[in-house]
Image 1 (tube, rainbow, N blue to C red):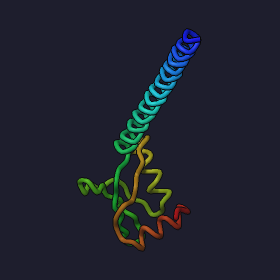
Image 2: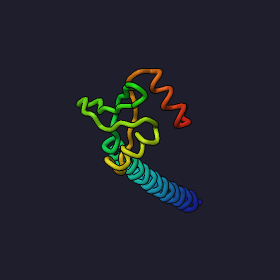
Image 3: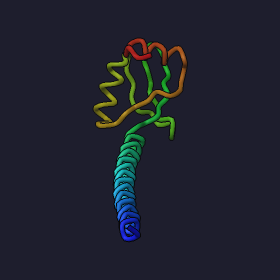
Image 4: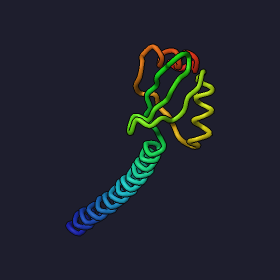
Length: 117
């Protein structure tokens, strides 16, 4: 009878050990997968930041002038958002342009023309 309890206890211990090893492996795999996903996300965000120009807008006599916020360099001009957008796409392909500063009323006009909120 003692052998039965010893065998049962040993079997249970081995079973628990196997289950814990399985759980440990599953958790490790999940963490590695999450780490890979975070690395890919980080790389994507860094690429987006590198491919984005922060700009400011001015309007003079119905013409929009777009400047790089970083160095105040003139980028493009246009009478409509479409002209501005087309010029930006031509000069800066695969680049996002965010109008982040400038005359609030001009920014509202451009957003209304573009249909953005």
